[in-house]
Image (cartoon, rainbow, N blue to C red):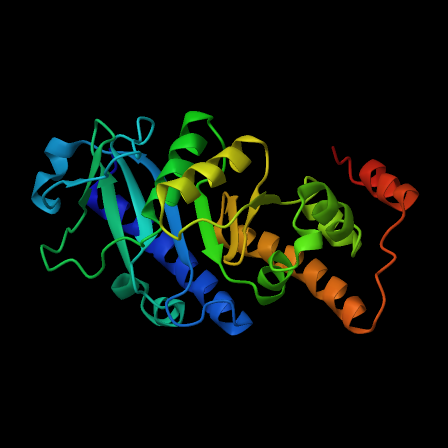
Length: 274
């Protein structure tokens, strides 16, 4: 286990990266009020006995949520009601660090200063933990889960004719080369479900298991997983640029032509895409 100083330096670095990401999201207009949430698995197994003085009472995760691969892990996560514009300025007030208990059935706040806990985890905790548990269990390099509300992508989820994975990805991947290069698999689509629900978490997990790194929640927002919060932001940003191009063409009264099949194949060969 890392020393207290090393642990604080690690968490401090993750806080700073979270702050930078939060600022970008706010500047984009994708984080209205307390919209969106972010979590990072510190990828550090900790010893409860060595940390007891810094841990609060256990909070059960609840029915349908169990994290067998996260036992002992520290998760940095945005708080419920926290605003990204505030996290950008002072991440320690808008985020909290939780330790998943060794049995994966509860969490404790990690609070080395022995002061009051600033925030409770986001209401989307079930989704974040289920995804992190899957990522840890599959030894994925991804350790970040980011959820936000990109305006144009949310708008597209309200248009029924585009709400089909084959149709959506067939169009969006052809809007500009970068979409195909950065997100060659496209995006997974999840039908509307109550925000914060286990049903939404399970549906999102299914899309992650199918190989999607970005996932659209119908009439709600977008989620991405990556090894770095800025990379997760980039993935959503480029996907939303594709949605902007599509909507601009539609606003001009034309369905966009998109990259041709041969042009997409050329990109696949040039960038070694699957």
